[in-house]
Length: 259
Image 1 (tube, rainbow, N blue to C red):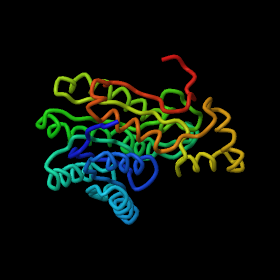
Image 2 (cartoon, rainbow, N blue to C red):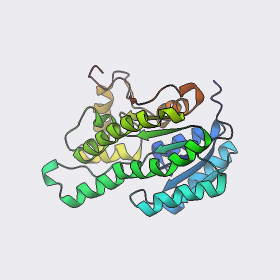
Image 3 (cartoon, rainbow, N blue to C red):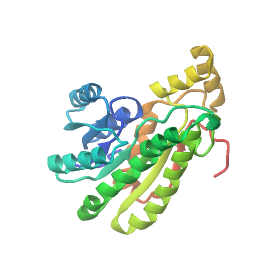
Image 4 (cartoon, rainbow, N blue to C red):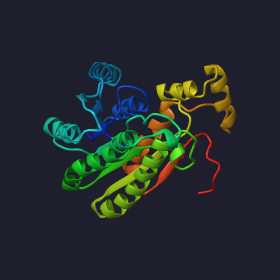
């Protein structure tokens, strides 16, 4: 399927590894020019070099801490300076620590809000004038299945990502007249470094935890970053342009509710 991303400019957060890296690589394979952000500069530059070597695409690494207003603003400014436009924004940046809600102090909540919620707000606010000026665009947030099917111990993520879903739905109504779609993907169990932290938090043997998670998934396997990246590519392309205001589980059937 030709998604017609040639010449499009995308910003992908948390792209030094995991889901963000998979998304950046897929968009580059489909012809987009990609700016990638993450906090660890060495890992980010290595990711950019690898994606360029594999795809031949132009990849701009921008070391940035998504929890800082200044870094969000600088990242967008650098993309405009380099490419002159922004067509796609993918907000993605791991997740806050795990822990029982009663154990979480104000500092933990503040950090989670900055990382998960305000990051999305700031990046969207910064790119929207450029998308409006060019006649359209796409904003996509990566949350987690726990935002719509809460899991004990994931309170920081659940609360802040639920806020992201509500924010994105409202934003989608306001920017639709400008040809901009806004969606949120809620991945289930995806084979990434984050999932290994979940294994460790369970206090069981990693292989035992892995097998238990697989047993929960109707499709009988954990997801891959490609499972997420393929949907991202569709949603930010013209073929997905009429889809907006949605929160979409990509979870192998893990979500049990009727939506």
